[in-house]
Length: 117
Image (cartoon, rainbow, N blue to C red; front, side):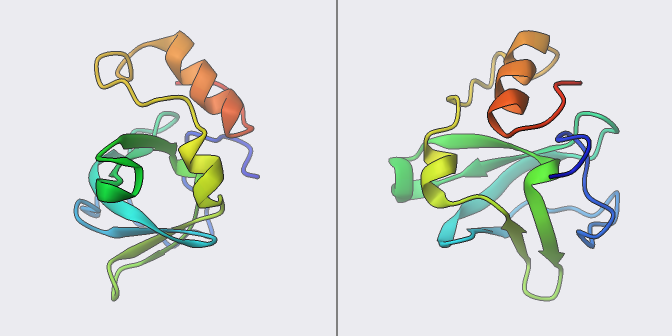
């Protein structure tokens, strides 16, 4: 796991400033949806993934540290978590996720990294 769960790994291939909106997101065991929005902010980078019918239209917040690889040619993002792990993550709350340290601590803790935002 990366030292900071809220930062992209140096080996992910993600270039800051690249628009990832619409990229497909692949868990270790299959597709989980598409990127609805994302942030490259240092120390608080994340993806918001629209899971579509997979979890009945639910959105999930994935810290950037879960991204193992970005493939710009295929417009796919690979994360190092299973579908079940993502499904069991704290529920995404679009009202809380921006600037709410407790919420980021909860999500960051679930994904196993430091809880900085």
